Image 1 (cartoon, helix red, strand yellow):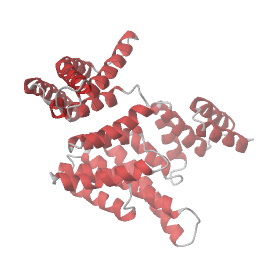
Image 2 (tube, rainbow, N blue to C red):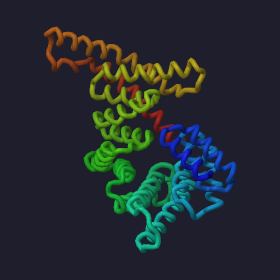
Image 3 (cartoon, one colour):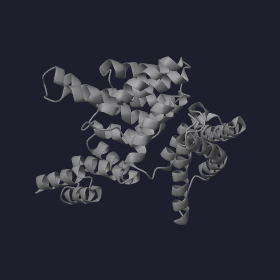
Length: 342
């Protein structure tokens, strides 16, 4: 019966029926309360349902009951933790995976060594990312970050996590734009052609890095994928608007920011909490974009009627553009302050 329930849960998960999947794993735990595999599996489903608190509780229980089984639960738990707690969980997961890899090489167990190697690389990339963020003030943080990135890329030169983290590291080290961009582009081309798409948070980080390197066309490509997957994510629409504005596509910028505003209006109507600073920034940008959008529409109409010059399409009032840049700088400063406070 338990095996049948596991099969049923897996079917629900593959069909993205997460509530049904969670209930099935709960049934298994009703019959076998100490089944750590069911705990780990239920935790993954709860993460999909945004119940990270309960997911963390289950993973913690599983780790205490079976500390040396299933290294992946430690890597999953690390994503839900912060700072040194996340670092400890990642290190434990990497340790168990490296032990598995050693046993495979020695012929003691049979397993997909390529998949294990990729997971180890992802673990090192996660540690490197910690040293760029939560643990950036730790002693030798930069050296540890660089060591972990190198370890990850030695194990898996095509690790999209390691390549993207490598880009972040190079930006923090003030390397040239070309040197910083190279690993990000490699990561982008790998995951864009892959059958399985990376997480939304990974793609949003990718877009932000492209924006930081002023590669707005690439950022737009990533953000368009994000809004196609989930058209109710305000941050993605905001970034999309900023990218279009930076390459002087003011109609597209207005469309994206208008969509973000509509989502804010929807949340306000439901009395949901919102990011008031971002909301105000979007409203200000829409006001400043209005004359530029009208000018672009007029130029397009002129060209459609056979008047005007195509080169005039982006001949806009520089004062309006400077005003928009000022608003974006203020929002970026607010974001930087928030990250420092966190």
